[in-house]
Amino acid sequence: MTLTEQLLARASRREKVAPGDNIWVSVDVLMTHDVCGPGTIGVFKREFGREARVWDANRVVIIPDHYIFSADAKCNRNVDILREFAREQGIRHFYDIIDDPKGLWKFDSVKGPVKRQYGSHYAGVCHTALAERGHTRPGEVLLGTDSHTCMAGAFNQFATGIGNTDAGFVMGTGRLLIKVPETMHFHLVGELQPGVMGKDVILHLIGEIGFDGATYRAMQFDGPGARSLDMDDRMTIANMAIEAGGKNGIFEFDAKTDAFVREAAKRNGAKADFDPVEADPGQKFVFDRTFDLSKIEPTIAKHPDPGQKALAKQCGDIGLQRAYIGSCTGGKTSDFLAFAKIIRGKRVKIDTFGVPATPQVLEDLRSIKWDGKSVWDVMVDAGVQMTENPGCAACLGGPEDTFGRVNQPMNCIATTNRNFPGRMGHKEARVFLASPATVAASALTGRVTDPREYL
Amino acid sequence: MAKTFQGRIFVVRDNIDTDQIIPAQYLNLVPTIHDEYEKLGSHAMCGLPDSAYTTRFVAAGKMKTDYPIIVAGRNFGCGSSREHAPIALGAAGVKAIIAESYARIFFRNCVATGELYPIDAQERLCDTLKTGQVGTVYLQENTLEVEGKTFSLKPLGDVMPVIESGGIFNFARQNGLINTASNAA
Image (cartoon, rainbow over all chains, first blue to last red; front, top):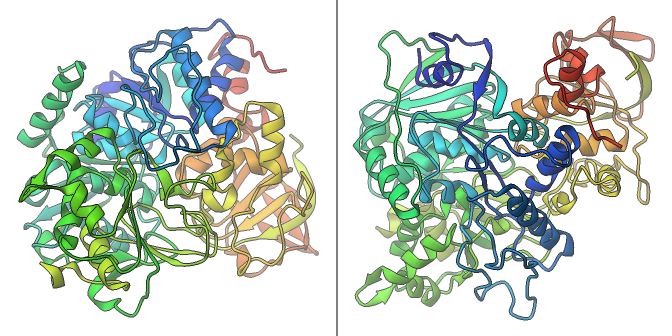
């Protein structure tokens, strides 16, 4: 069995499962956020009753992160719905924006989107936060009401996105009917060259198999190349499995996984025992190809879908009006470090926005110093507009007052994950996906630029 | 839901993602709150770029669409897992989508909610049919009839009874899989 089949067999208490089997799976963690949480809670109460209790209050993780820093009254209300539910159900892992469990959230428009407006529990972008706070554990099943939940596959677990109705069902029962996907095997060899990142790998792979090349399938990344990648790169790659239509992305467990997971569990006092799955020599794949990481060059996805692969060095004719660094995919500490290295001591030529994924990333950027100057200050001095309020922000457009939102037709290059029409706001704008290094180099020139020119 | 329905067709092409079906700024609406459910319907498909789609799916000032049947190309519903997408279409009055293929989560959300039938076409109908034509879908016969021409559709199989009963919860109740009563108004 492949890694995904082993995980699903374990979660359904079966000796063996095969692609196409419909099985009832026990869920280890259910995650929801402010955009889909209120609807999920609505389904749960409608179907299981006003007095119903969630199947396990310690296994439901609620992370408001999408529309937090907006004056929109409904957005603020949605966070209040989550708080009320967490209180009523005794949900421990609720990463609230405010500290008062009986309070109400109201974004302060006078203070604006840039100055810090969150309390001590807030965790930022759910997928990054799940990993940071020790909720991603090898061998487990994680379901979330968000398509990028597949990011947690980096940690050798089955993780996928589901809708509100399915999530409402999980809330009540702790189980879900899942079809076992076929597995596509991406055997990675070689190592990334300087200036090339995990983002380039996944954009290259999606371009190779097409925007729907993994629909209904698991994407398994292994081999010496996969082992050479650090956890952040693995997260970026697993995160975008959905952009090829994948059900999940999955990596093998190794010492890097172990170290990351233990550190995260310790930081947050989360459960630290886990049982990874290992590759089985008899595993069967529906697709099996080897990719040499050392041959991958800085890659972008052109508008209007993540499968429009092109080499950055061949796209210098694409003029840009905006650059954006942030999101679960491209707003981690390592993403900002790669970005800052390129723009350090220079000035960006186009409007450039930076949104740390989580408060932890923000703290890292403030505490990591290069020649006595924080990375945060390196960004600001280069002309990047940084916000102290981590979250999903303009990656998915959001309410009109969202920081960095693309409100006019323009070309924007972003470290984010998706570029269908309207994704970052205006439906006639064009979004180009790239690595943090490529976005940084492009911000300096105002056109798509290969970051190796600045190494 | 009825097994046969007739209405105007709205034709879209490949990769209609959930942002085009329901743009992210409307995700502040909660689908299980009645008024907000209706509002989601009024915004259905408003994310389609005006440059590519000159006809509005829901006319300005209206809550419902004049097009209960959508014909699409490949990968309809790709992108986010937001259930607001099938719900917006269902709330707008869409009965069925006939696409060359679907993104996985969208397909599953159609079935789970029972909002509409996501039917697979046997051929690329988005190249042959035009927005505004009147079509009739025969679910039992797996056909679509448009202006005297009949196109065959792939059978919905196991998902048909789930959608017919109004989604997974109703289906599970009717089949004894769960035993709680619904509090639906």
